[in-house]
Length: 334
Image (cartoon, rainbow, N blue to C red; front, side):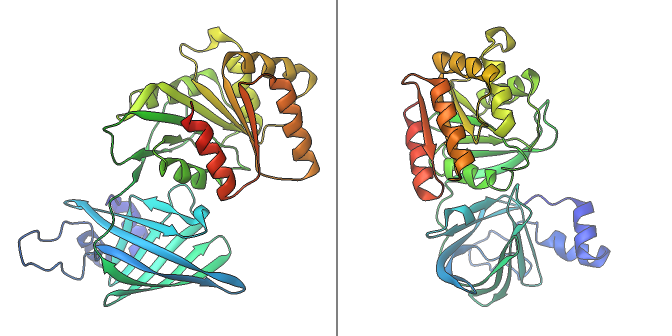
């Protein structure tokens, strides 16, 4: 569990509180028969419910793991609401209170208070609050993937790497370039893809994309353990998808092109962009993803399909679990 001293001072109210918070970051005694003191978060599989006014009750599970000395992580899985699932590499625990924040999405937090084998608290997602009641049902389930922050050259901020817990089988990977409009949904897509065994590098949201940033991201993934270097692709949203297409339509712009492309919510191609998309569609496999169903989005999806042409391109429309399945199936074929 990695927590900076400055963050603890800010969040815990001073040096005395800092000492208690630091205790939560240390490894509990590992000797046989010893019992972790109250300063350490309880490890286990906690199952229960999430409720919100006017919404159906949701079944949820929280995994609190202690994978190595001095480190804890947590995973939330919500049945029927995959957009709420996440893995957190850093958690805060003090005085029986646990706080977990979703990586890449500060508006989703899980705040719980320990009551014996129970957790009571609230999952907050933007302006919606889900009262939570979870009870320990046994040891935690094995981790599917892990997430960690890192720096990537050319990126305007910190990136997040979602990588499979089992790196023994090399698999496909994607560098994801969101915009401000898709920043709130990108962590959910990264989670959904990582649960299917893909390695995902989630870059900070921006409006630009150049050859340096793209090359650095692809190179980062090709050096990542567990990645098949021949199956590294890109995912770009909105206007960044157009910038990506323009870069890839010029072979000399990159030392090594991605194996496939996902264009999320790309605008209706202009007259000048239609040729660019056609060139890209002839050179690589492209998936167009459109989650909205309004008339403007429908025209954009049809326009991209026509511009790409051929059988190497596919368009997926819709959102939720069905869209996730379609995207995962397409990626597994790459």
